[in-house]
Length: 115
Image (cartoon, rainbow, N blue to C red; front, side):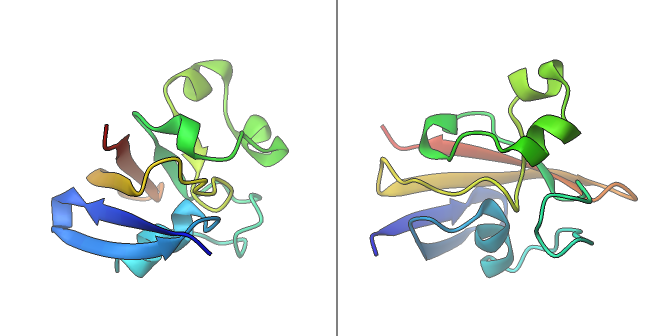
């Protein structure tokens, strides 16, 4: 399996992950806590992330994501971390933790491909 290098800028963490893992797995491997209650099946919607750039390196939105997000949310880059899988496309990904909303479990991340 092809490895993808991920940098969590806010925490200064660099990790290698396999292509095909979910953003939830990437975030957890980095040691970042993110709320999830349904076991990663896209039911609870607690693991919302915003991908500000690099959507082309993730799998397309799933039916679960279409149920959880409005068209406006989708245009802003909202994804469920348990549903969005890393496709690769570039050997480097940059995730930047922007904040955590208490009580909602919403982690804002920025995923940028190195050009």
